[in-house]
Image (cartoon, rainbow, N blue to C red):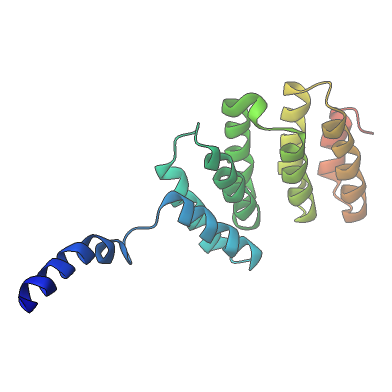
Length: 164
């Protein structure tokens, strides 16, 4: 009887034991990515967010958090890829990407001194949202940072957009 009880108990526990240490869920990956961002562990953040993105549909509410986290990590690792990932996402998500998202990406690119990428995002933002005052203001912020850095190429690009 004891063996039967033990066997039944193990059978009932088997599904829960199997789930321990199994593959992370998209939600787990988003959480891990966010934690890694907080620790400035850009590679771990990128890996976690990309694992989440591979398992999430673009319509899933967690997709935006994973995508924006991926972009934030990429700004530190590969600014050109961060730019292209963000612009592709902004185009596909449309109104799902708001002024705050545009501003955050441009601000982080500018803070990293990635003026060409920040200006490319600015240009795309101005074209897709010409009435958005926040996006327009970012041009001024990028200009100030480029002037402080003495980046003539960035200032020339901003002049082409009407910021000088």
